[in-house]
Image (cartoon, rainbow, N blue to C red; front, side, top):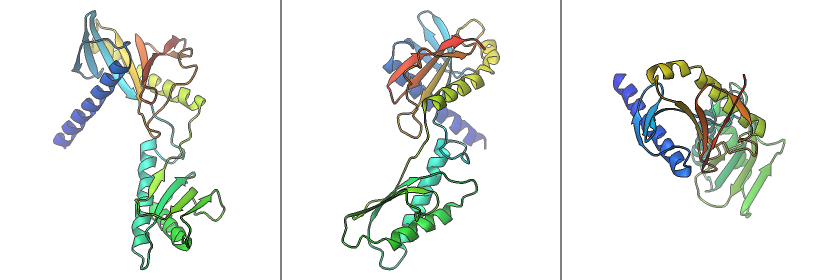
Length: 249
């Protein structure tokens, strides 16, 4: 257990370091200097003007379905459904090679992925191409439960699960505020560990649709309540860093 925890910590630190380096490459807001691993906050940055503590945390889109803990958990569930369906389809005698692309609708709490995968395999089996190169089934009442769009194409490619994440301006602001608020509650410990240094918070998001949160047009004008010396938001989708404005509680 100790070795697993140590390996997880090392991998986490490496990932966070890559994020900070990417943010430094995208913007001069984060100064040059040696970045050293630390705990509470995550890193110490030795700059020409002194030491800066940096805490880092991810901002992600909200899951489209409320029965998942995160977008990554939802993504994993959908991929499992499609992979299981593909295996189920090709186990059947006479199965013709096809490529299937799937967009999901809301998945209800307690949904069994094997039930969904069997329903998808049954649907593809029941809708042969019959000389056509593609069949597209979109927002139809006869689609299996939980599916919004199913595309069947005449080619032998792995079946794919595409995203259907819900993301709007209000949700982006909510996610940023929630992550800032959660880390702000730990700031006293960070200041205790680095008492004479400014403490920054770096929010970050990935580049793809599952983990990426883009800038909103008003992001630099909004105010968020926090006690960090600076709060920065690095969006890999925008390849840039913005500084968030401090506002009243």
